[in-house]
Image (cartoon, rainbow, N blue to C red; front, top):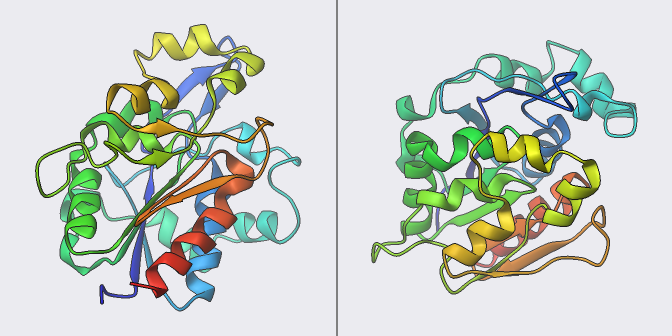
Amino acid sequence: MPARKALIAITSASAALFNGKETTGLFISEALHPFNVLTAAGFEVDLSSETGSYTPDWLSQQPDFLNGSDLETWQDKNSSFRQKLDNMTKAADLDESVYGLFYASAGHAALIDYPTARGLQKIAEQVWASGGVVASVCHGPAIFADIKDVAGQPLIKGKKLTGFTTEAENTMGIMSELRGFGSEMVEELASRLGATYERAPGIWDDFHVVDGRLVTGQNPASAASTAKAAVEVFDQL
């Protein structure tokens, strides 16, 4: 049985969006919700980014996405979540062998650094090789661009997954700016690496996909249910 210890990956990138008016980075609830779920399920939880730093995403701090107890936790710099987030160890300095569950949180910025984030990717590869659970939400599948299984094949090849829809990028009106990042959209990455992309009818529906030890969620609303599903899979290992 893999260790009941989880790593939540955090994007270390930031970029201007919405014609330079706003900044994308970590979508806060996509890390906070799984942190809460995993902690409640008895996991020891670490947070880490490729550089050890992060920038909070503007949109994720708006009242529609951050309110109630989530907002209180975010504003309390002494909360366990903020303490771990604000004092992250960079991925390359962690012992990748101690984790039984890997969860890639996101934000649009993940499209920038995740595809080449070898420190984080190596941890995910080790978790997978040791029989643990690998999960992601929203733009988190960008991390799968260079994650291999033990046979050297793309981890997601031949598997079902979900993530943020191309329709949603277009609806938000930011596709041209995202193209400026030089980034693949989640659906494109899935297609290129031989995965089957699935989605809910609505772009903001709570939706996740379980394929063996791979658990993925579509959008911010799916962060908690994805983490709960990942725990269920872990508990059946």
